[in-house]
Image (cartoon, rainbow, N blue to C red):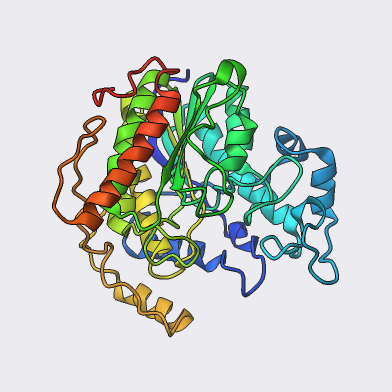
Length: 411
């Protein structure tokens, strides 16, 4: 392991991230990144901070995860006539339409996450964040779910070859982190933890509790499925019932977090009901877990999130703040000049007034099978029982394999 870092936090950024642009109508628009960086800048978050501009990933970097044929297909892709149901390599589908210079743009995304990993591995920083990354659905031979190249898996693969042999990956995107799980499903050096909307109710329809890893890696894939409609208090109850125990047992040297914010109640593509305040609480919890178990080494990346004005910029500004150890109070007013620019870009969307949603993020910790205080409100109690059922299924599937007691809330 490297010696003491020269800085606590590093921001990886280049305007080239904005070249990752599918179509004007596509829900993943570069504006979400542009408005995030502008909001963070307007709040003074980057005072004295020089962003690290990454180089594009090389073909050798991409070959850590992707096939040569797939990389060539991305380089030479052309939008097909019509829309075949299953185009070659997933390129040209409605989710993954071909766009100009796609290979170059996607390679810069990978380069950003790799640059963050290298800064931590070299000991130059403890924490690094690249909001352009998080393309966790891309498969070795195909694009999927708006993801061309899997920057997360490439960076983890690089870390495994450069001094790390226990890496914890924690994915809080509303969609299951299927591409990263698949890449390391039989590798006991990588713990993948995904908290996502229940696979029976949302694409990619994977991430069941029973998906636990293969061979010597059995127990190192941990999946917590959350029912639609889940709000902050129950989501946080589930997170704290699963993630800290798994990381404590695994003893990672670094925590890699995919911080998709499509869990928000206003997100147009999914059905969870978190607030920005709840998402911020998740980021701070992951930072604390990295401090507790990995000597502070935390690589944080973006992911999904399609509330382009009201959600993503605020949530990821909190993520940037967490990485820089410059936490922002959710009650902080949104700067007027930023709100004016957002209103000019999207005149039909009211900009947020503050950096939070005014949500109460208090929660009751999971206290074992059959635990939980009944409120007398059947809707609330039913939601809590559903969450606890998922928690227990996940713990029973994996905690014993990690040397923990699935039914003991102290583990």
